[in-house]
Image (cartoon, rainbow, N blue to C red; front, side, top):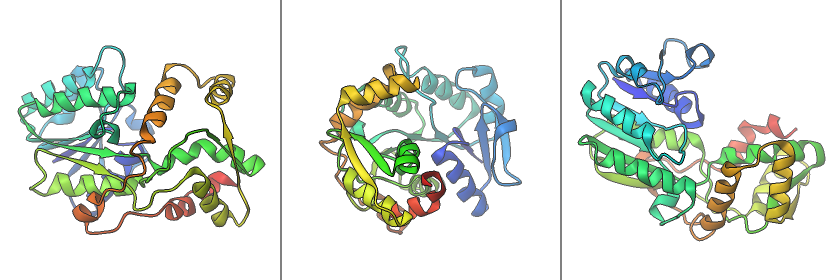
Length: 282
């Protein structure tokens, strides 16, 4: 039995569907089972990293766990620590943690630092482990959908990196292989898409799919922060994201062949993701 935490998220929902389609025994853990929109027949259980009492039932009979912590605060990787303790008691054999590419490139932003500490907890758990470190998710483009739809304009922040963006389905495909086959123990994989794209090129791809030209406008960091503050989305989390983007310019363009090697299939393109989500840009 495989337990997928974060089962309703971008990667977790794809992973649950893939494992179920392959006939693998899978259990989906979420804080709100009643809201889960997962394939019929999937076992869905309530579980919360911040409520240790909910974990034993979720972990009962489980051999492998896909670990997706909701986030990190100043107290450190408490959620991984809680899960590891419960998984050890349940007899879990293998943990596969979703991390971020910044860890492998020495990033010091809060998000990468949180994942680095979380990786350490998993690696020192006494169980087999594998770490998946994806770069920028293609779903990041959701953030531009409103102004693309209303103004045919994509407002980016100056210095936004050229990015080998990855489709969440590719991350899930790698996770499915790692969770169901041996040979990936004690390994950390950087995961990217197959092409490095500038913000300008990302806008062009969206425009090509829409059949309309998309204007890409650069904002200063201060202008971006002011806009997010106006929308009520500012604060430490935005600051952390902007710092990650600033640092990631040094590596986010680098292309890894891990998706191809592990799954046997080339990474999905940004155009594929855009075509699948074209409705959000209209």
